[in-house]
Amino acid sequence: MLDNADAADPSLTQLVASGVSGSLPAGPELRERPPMSPENTRRALDVRNRVATLLVDRMGLVRSAALFVFRNQPDIAREAGSAFERRRRARGQPGEAST
Image 1: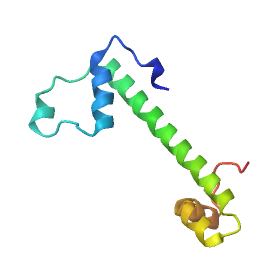
Image 2: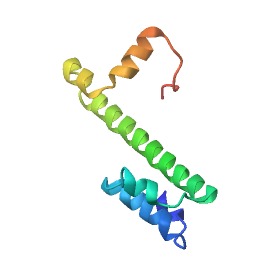
Image 3: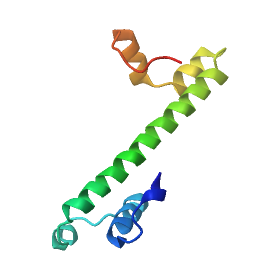
Image 4: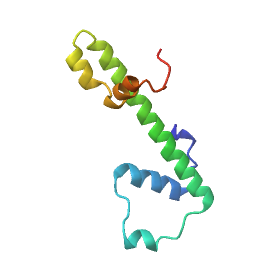
């Protein structure tokens, strides 16, 4: 996923690294930085969106595995599942197709 990051652009690499470590600048430090170019902004948003998608996918896999493992213990399975997904299914809203 991050293998395609542009190694020639250290500012993008620093942005991703600082976001992952949780040490993003705040307040005056952030205002003193020059604005990012539209291309760097686009790439940073793309990386952020891909990381978020990967995280959501992994969470779904873990929840699915937990539901399978604890299928005979509904109380534990309920805790491992997603309350949001349960409410969505209860309302009958469309979502991802079951596999």
